[in-house]
Image (tube, rainbow, N blue to C red; front, side, top):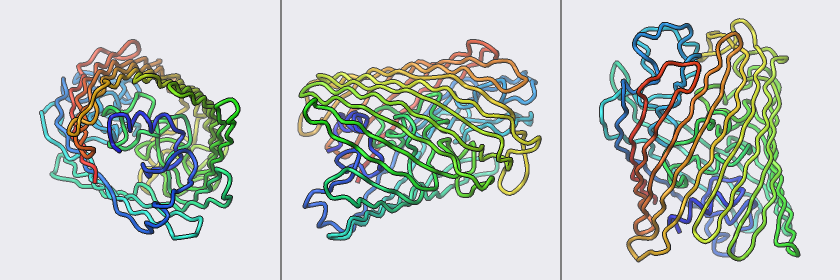
Amino acid sequence: MLVLLSPLAALAEDVVEVPAEDPGDGYSPDEAQAEETLRFTGYFDVGFVKATGNGSSFLPNDHRVPLDYGSDAFAPAVNSRGEVASTNTDGRFTNGFLPRSVGIGSTPSFLINTASADVRFQPRHVPLFLFARLQLMPRFNATGDQTRVELQQAFGRLSPLKNHELAIFLGRFDSVFGIEYLENEANLRTGITPSLIARYTTGQGLGAKAFYRLQLPSIWSAVSFNVAATNNGTRIEALVPIDASLTGNFVGSARVGYELNLQYVQVKLGVSGLYGPRNDQRVVTARQRAVAGDFRLNAFGLSLAGELLYLIDERGTQQGKFTGQTVGELASGFEVLGGWGRVAYTLPWKSEAFTGTTLYGRYDRRHGRFEGFPDLQTDRFTVGARVDLFDMLALKVELLINRELAGAPNVQNDVFTSSAVFTW
């Protein structure tokens, strides 16, 4: 049931799977689910947005080169995809480390953020599950409307052991790193926008992954293991290619989690790691590595969650970052330390129409440095509210207050955004 507790409950489970009705980390369908061999579901997300300044993080008189090394272009996010109001540079040079944009600048606008359709197939009496998600994103650019269609996920899952929570995946799927990937989709996310470090941890991967959870009922606990080998690692597609490996080697990522499940209190802790070649250039010896820690606490309607990340990119080839099939920007050395913390409270009342109300706040901080360039420090305060109606409609409003702390001039890049997510 998609009440306000649903997105919080999704965070409370180490879900390795997109289908929202999966009961937990592994796959153990109940009898009713086993009878449903083919299902079509989805959602669409309609937003209204107003960004300050010119809708980007770039000042008109800032002529540093490259411009995106000295500004956080991801800060003025407007939707759950992390897309921003604008990346318009007025012709100034950037090195390609940019988010996708909805192209509205500072103009208030309604948007169809995402129209998403899922198909899932569960054969009777066979431990296989097939899932595909197709998404449509109508967008605007300088020359007119530009619509993208993306096969965001497509995988098969094998659950070979009947009495153990073991699942093996092959295809294109969510990251296993950290916890924020659990809220990638607008209908699962408590709020609207992702954190300042989501660009490094929430990308889909193409490859193989496995999940196992060991229950410890005598101490009301469980231990879980997520591992993956993918072309790209865990970054979003705007930063690195996903659909092919440029080095011929895979990137390994993993998370080990512990959970304590009491009657009224849940505590979950996790440690993640990543290692492998950068997939934005063709040199195998240029590596990326990352570590992260995460926590979650749910008790009496109160939810606390947070994540801390440290990541290093080794320098790639002089011309290494690929745009399509063309050698493009430099694959510079890079280092980032960042994290986020969120508090949310679900009000203790509901009715047939109002199925949940949640108030929340989040603090993000990011300290990034490209090799040979000054450090860039930014942070963000996010406050918002979510109301769910009839288990099918989530109404959200959110305010983002972005700040440049060091390494960049102050710029007006705050955002008011709202979202109506219809789930079917």
